[in-house]
Image (cartoon, rainbow, N blue to C red):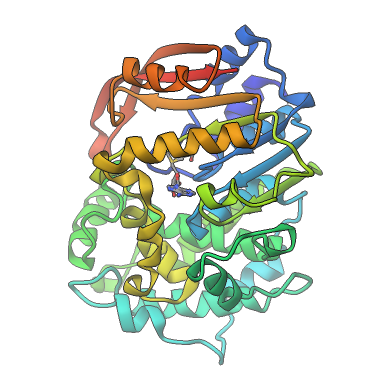
Amino acid sequence: MDINSIEKKLNITPNGYVGSKKNKISWINSCFQNEGIDLKNSTVFDAFSGTGSFSIYSKLIGAKKIFSNDFLISSALYVKTFVENPGLKLSEEEIKYLIYNKNRKTDSFMQKYYTGEEKYFHEKESIFLDNFKVNIEDLDGNIKINMQDIFYLRKNRININDDQIFKIGYKQAAAFAAILSMISSWFGGGAGKFSSPSYKSRKIFTVSREKAKRKDRPFIGEELVLDYLKYSKSSLDKINRCIEPIETNALTFNTDTMSLLQTKAFVNNPIDLIYIDLPYGGEHTDYFKLYGLLESYVLSKPILQLNYLNEINYFNSKIEYEKSFIKLLELLKFNKISTWIFSFNDSSWTSVNRIINILKAFTNRVKVYNAEHSYKYRRGTNRNGTEYLFICK
Ligand SMILES: C[S@@+](CC[C@H](N)C(=O)[O-])C[C@H]1O[C@@H](n2cnc3c(N)ncnc32)[C@H](O)[C@@H]1O
């Protein structure tokens, strides 16, 4: 696929995520052209993949092999859907089942933990979300989700090898991606995501937004319950449209990148190019804090029980950041990866010159590209800033 079509595809992919690189991919591609980097013959590793813009780009441009990893299961589910999935879509019948089937196995996890004025959801929304999740497990022809296994592996930080990778059926992952993207859209986009977590404050935001559009009635009755039937259907349709029927040699991991780079995972699959899009550092890029609710929903575990993720959340504190960054570079060297690509911007944890100096201690050549970008914030505000791409060989 050519870069214009890839850009269009990324624009319609419902993965608005804090720090998403979907609108920077064309620019990254032009930097690659300038450097003579051709992914077609490369094994690529998108090492902090988020919602996978770089992995999707790699798939569509025809990379030889793609590995992706993110420590958040909610992110890995997007990548499983948009990258690894060879084209398996949800049928109309399955979509109906997911939305309307009243499942006897349903638990009341969301109702128990996230319902009420001071929490995230109205009771009716929570009942829907709990029911939807067990309906996902019923989808046919897929590997059964074994959340307990995943939870166990992650909790015990067991080293991942080839048969311990993130296993979930493609259709199940697609259904999760749809419901997660629906939940995200209810809390608005950009850096404000989930930062005002109560149902009351979410209501204020969504009500004013929906009133401004007023195309139809998004709320059910006077209670201002979001129309989950309408939203989930449109989210499932959107996800279906974005699943490309392209067989790709791709594998998604859901673990800590630092530990993954210490396993034997890449011994038989040496990486040619690694793309590193780290959290930029600080409160606003603490992804566990930003997306903990989605993790909690998928795993049916209250956020407090997911706190082990904080132990591998190395890039959220400015103080620890540099030490972790250097450790990461040592691992890249240890794995003999020939091309390292880093994204940073002018709000990153330190100055560009400092980053260059650190990188120069590890690689022979560091080339820095920069571009002016406009970053969108919640409620339509924009900020201009500089985006940097570091290419190290
Ligand atoms: C800037 S975002 C990546 C955005 C992504 N490139 C995109 O376009 O959507 C950084 C990602 O690193 C992940 N992350 C943070 N610490 C991690 C760790 N120790 N191991 C794996 N992933 C981690 C976060 O969950 C987040 O999704």
